[in-house]
Structures are given as structure tokens and as C-alpha cells.
Amino acid sequence: MYVGISDQSVCEVIFMLKEIQVNKSKKMVFCMDEDYHVFAELPIGTEFYAGYNDNGEEYSNAEDGIYPLNRVDIDYPDNVTPSYGWGYINIDERGRALHGGGANLGHIGAVQPYQSELMPTLGCFRMYNADVFWLCHQAVLSRNNGIDVVIHVVS
Image (cartoon, rainbow, N blue to C red; front, top):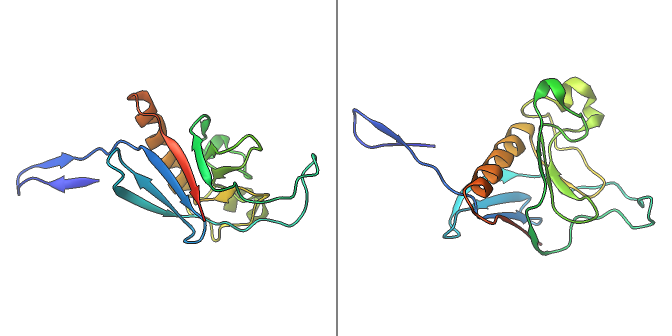
């Protein structure tokens, strides 16, 4: 994000990410800084397929709560898994996450910056590749600067 200082100069404004709020009812991720001001809003898909995983647990989105940020994977279009797209942010121990992709779109469709639709998952929150890629970088930058980033899931 860039903010003009005068007609002659531009200053880059960097926000440190403190909280990734996953709002299921609004189908949005709200990125909050250390003062809990929203500095970015990103759409998500919350739909998931009916069924059960290998442990007999019913597919569902992550429960409401606050989770520590513990795993961030960043991929690039030339080395991407279509199911997860350009980035993956783990939320809970069951492996539910924020990620891009959409294998049902085929390899080419799943690795586009903005897929034609946010496909259902097995309980994760689907994001557009460009958005989750940016969010992954924000999370890593903030963590590398000593900020304990959390994921807050709300209904």
C-alpha cells in the first residue's frame, strides 16, 4: 500500500499483521494490525463437502476460537499443488487451513492468481491464490519481526 506524502514523494506504509480473523458468516478474512485495526479484507469460501475423514470425524470448518500461527507454506505457480494453491496457513491440529487452489478446476485453473470460483474443501477455508500468497508473506514478515500472529475464527 502506498500513501502520498506530497506531489513529489511517496512513502511505503507497512502494516505488521497481529491477527488473522476468519469470519465464517461474512466469508471474509480481516487482517488486523497490532492495534487491532483492519488493514485488509480478503474473501474466503467456507463451503465444504459432506462426509468423514479417515479418523471418522465429520468434515467441518475450524471451531470458533483463537489459534497460534504455527505453519505457513508458500508455493509458487511453477511448483504448486493444485489442491492447495500458492499458499497454506494451518489453523488447527486436524489440518484445517486457509489455502488457495481448487483441484476441481484442473491444474491450470487451480494455479491462476484468481480462480473462477472458490471451490468447496474438506473443511478448510478456500482463498484466491493471490490473496493467500500475500497473506502468507504478511504472516511471515510479522513473525520475523517478533510478532506473535494469531488466527481468530468467528462465526
